[in-house]
Structures are given as C-alpha cells and as structure tokens.
Image (spheres, rainbow, N blue to C red):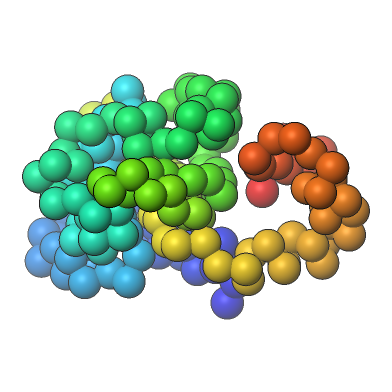
Amino acid sequence: MPLIKELDHCVSIFSKLIHNDHIIQYLFEDSSLGIGFLNQDGYYQEVNQRFAKCLGYTIDELRGMHSRDLTCPLFLTLDTYIFPRLIKKEIESYCIRKQYYKKNGEAIDLRIDVFSYCTDDSDSYEVVAFIQENSSFYEKYLLTIHPNLQDILDSSSTPGVLLINRSGRIY
C-alpha cells in the first residue's frame, strides 16, 4: 500500500478510535512514525517518543515549541503558505519534504504528512503531523510520475519544490 494511502488509512482509523484512550495511547507511544499534535497556531501540544528521539529533544522540551522554531529558515515560506490553508479548511492534508533542526543544531531531512481533524467541538480543528526521516523512496516515486522534476530540482536555487496538481492538491 503506498505510504500516502497508508497514512490516510491510519488517520481514518485514528479518528474513529479517538475516544478509546487505551488504543490511542498504544498507537501514539508505539508508532514507528514520529507523531506530533499541533494547535491551530502551530505549537506542538504533544509529541511521541519517536518524534522527540528523531530531533534529539525530550518530549517535555518539544511541548509548547512552535513548528517554525524547528524548521530551517529556507523552508519557512512553505509553512506560511500551506499551514494556514489547512487551518482554513481549504485543504485537508499535505505532505512536505523539509528540514528541521535537531537539538544539536544539525539539519535533518524529513518527510512530514500533516492532517487536520475535527475535535469534539465541531468548530474546532486540531492538527496532527507524522514525521519520518526522508528516504529516497518518495523522491524516486515523484521522479517517475514527473519526469522533468530532476531538471527542475537541479536548476532551482530554492531548497525545495512544492508540487500542486490541477485540482489544487499538494503532493
């Protein structure tokens, strides 16, 4: 199953089981993905151990940190464009490859899948981010469906490329 569909499936199951504390705790704590819950302002409310370990922080250190505090400056423009669209419900999710800074100052390439979901109060949305160290798998996949992508990447002076299909969905 492709990773995007797998993550969509996980989020679907996750949202259905959100009221079962034992299942949520198990999925959250034992996940092979880093998981972080953000509020609508972009502050991490909760993260799992995998998330913290990937970035070299403790869970307590990450609570209350803003995602921009972890993001390499070259990628902040993407965040200021995409995240507000998610909060305004213009998009339901997005996947981005970007760099975060580890606690030791080292940059790490990450693939971040971000989803919004409705809380008990139907007017309130929360955000969950799944992170994993970037692998070449996704890049190879994009190169197969977008054969000119390598030329774009090679000739670009920016650190990343945002791909949006004709219907406005962000790859």
